[in-house]
Length: 392
Ligand code: NDP
Image 1 (spheres, rainbow, N blue to C red):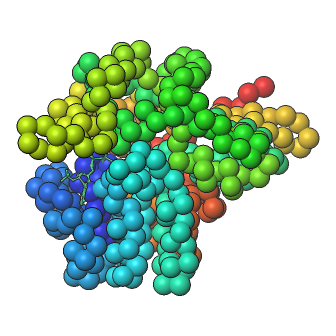
Image 2: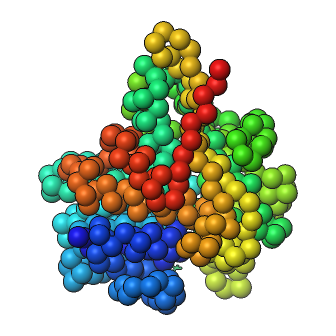
């Protein structure tokens, strides 16, 4: 029996709240807080049982500490934006509460995400006897656990990992992003990066692609991107020689993105407009469809997994370990499309691992540092069943 405080009532926040509410034997009390409490109330109205809602600006550490001291949760689930990671970790330290998130910290003024800022909290969390679990979404999150599971059960040594994220869903809009447009576009328009033999290699944004034959959804063009789980997996997977991340985009998506970039709409520096200072990408976010509104109109499936090669019993081995998720089924269950669903379910499961003490120790942790088995079991149980394709 535990109490969670979920912060951020967006697409992912809605799914986490639904999924926690489905498991009252673990999450006996739920508080949902966000910058606009009205969004929390909309989500609360979709549930069968009552939850509490609150208003909080998570950039304001003192305001969050006050909320934590009033509500006294066992855990904060941060599904606001990556900008709020550090203030929320500070607030958790001050109030003595465990912490979980789904995306690593990114400074607002620079499109760059790295674990170094959050890993720097290691000693403070340890000393306080508190735990922080970083990146408990799908990618990062489930992809890290897939790699740990492959390492434990399928390989003696892993040599290469290609993480592949495909969304074959169609929402019918000419251009929309499946999660927060600002965060999504910042991620895609930065240079691509991958890790090979101990070194980071950088390539121009979206300059390398491959057609990958996905199970269930078929061949799709996937672009090499930098993604945060590369940074922790290259540290924790034994014998790794190369790790890359790929995401599929339609030609239509890439064309729109190129135009938006060429005309300056993806800029993250402030500009003067009619006497106001505005940030073009934030204005763009305001005119694009809200990802939470895509749920009722998105059809099709996602497929996200890890293509892993290495050695088992002296033989070369290759597997693809993956999940596929259907947008319409997700909407029927939690009124959300599959991208928010595939992030929100692992956030709930990560929280469950901590609250049931299956994953519990003071300090700051990435997902692959824990025993993958109970998490993998829970994925099958709570809506994200996984499969392993073994190549001959
Ligand atoms: P949304 O933009 O839909 O939701 C974010 C929510 O956070 C909004 O409700 C917003 O409130 C709230 N918020 C923003 N700033 C603050 C603040 N200062 N204080 C309190 N609340 C705030 O984003 P998503 O739900 O799509 O994404 C949520 C998180 O999940 C992001 O960090 C994203 O990077 C991550 N993610 C991770 C994935 C993974 O697989 N690991 C995949 C997809 C997303 P308001 O509406 O009032 O502004």
